[in-house]
Length: 430
Image (cartoon, rainbow, N blue to C red; front, side, top):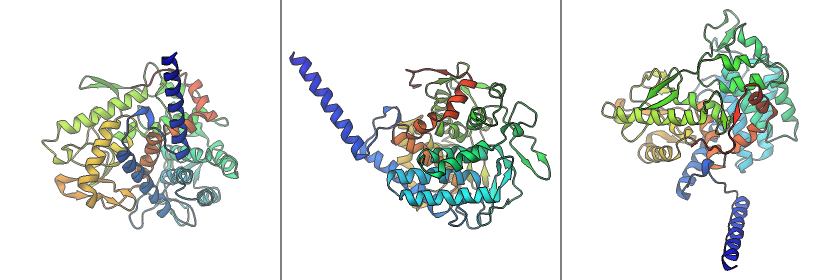
């Protein structure tokens, strides 16, 4: 009886502590990682500072967000999407008011509706932030449209009782997903008024899984399930790990879809994409370590992903894949891998913050990238990189908060069913 009473009291105490944590707004990290309060404070600071990019670099009239903090940069439809989600997240934390977030989102939606900004429900990659008109001879982009819509739908979950949700779903429902197939089983990268469809297609593993989910899950203009099955899942061994890899080996390709979709308990043809991204992240770390004698930037640090570099924007990456690299580390890459490799990510985040902050940390958090071998440090921020930082840290710090919202959407459930994904209820994919 004494033992039973002891365990009963222990359970009650644990429940009281949990309730206290919920009242205080303190959530556990995704995957139950044991996070110190010091590390939590740093990560929360990075998330909050990164959101400042969207508050300051979004045009106050049109609601379009700049692709880069560089003066004169165009707006990016993908960055604009990340802004919508970031405003909602900021309001949820009390960093801005609900009214301010709602007003910002309304301005964006009004511009998108008025300017139309694309074709068949898809949007141009780059827009003039002041007018909403196409700029830089950019394409109507399939993946950038998907990122905009996914972020907008996420924002809608925070404002379900307002008219914002209805407006956002109207944009989603009008997208003609089959049109972007161009008569094939793969999504085209994009379309231009003067040239038609681009010659590039999403035909192997990459960041397009979120595009696939949105297209299959559409209740108005869906694509057939065969489109999900058509793209290639090519694998290669690296240090004994079998990885379904992307062409460039850039870490972002293993992150973008995972910001929205919780793949931990989903299996596709015996593939768990969460486990796959974890293996690819570890491979990126191992590849960097193996090359640290050649590049001092890699000494105790890693994160090879598409980013700015000494010679411009490059699709940096590790093996397996093309593995283009020159000693440049994209700071967002290890931060956004935190849901896969919390210990390794936190270690490198703390190292970069401690050793490189004077050159890299500013009003919007970490600037894009750096290269010690070239004594080069990015002096600007990129909107999409800020966005993936915000969403991944929100997932990690708050027990998969983004995942929980996105996985409940009917479109997500339709995609899971049509793609014939198997649920692994008690599999943590560790």
